[in-house]
Length: 124
Image 1 (cartoon, rainbow, N blue to C red):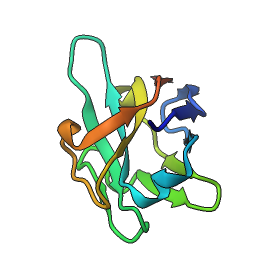
Image 2: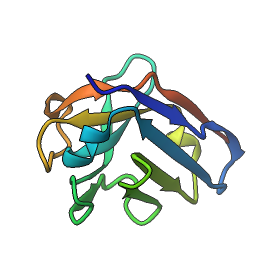
Image 3: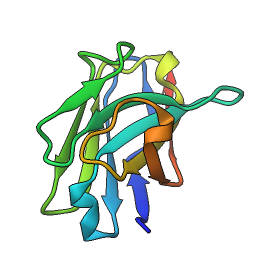
Image 4: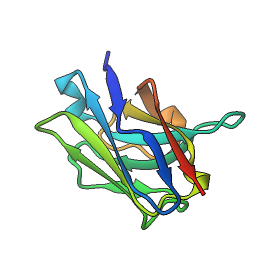
């Protein structure tokens, strides 16, 4: 079992920035893929960005490419999502997720463990 805890959500103005952080309370997570998803009420989870176990491979959804960046610090068991040029459409609950493979793609089914979520609200 991997326990994931997100932090860093909040409210910002259009064009602002936020940094989300996810701490995994299990050192074995460092061998597994990680990702960030987001969800708005009434819709399914959307894969935003993912990173491989060694941090060498990353993917970012087209909707956030060039604005969001995923990274991981294996020494601290953390995965971060740097979000810049935020837009009202980015408003959602953001979830950290972990899979059991060294690299996972954007499909929700690739991920087994999920955090509780952190709210990001962008106002115009």
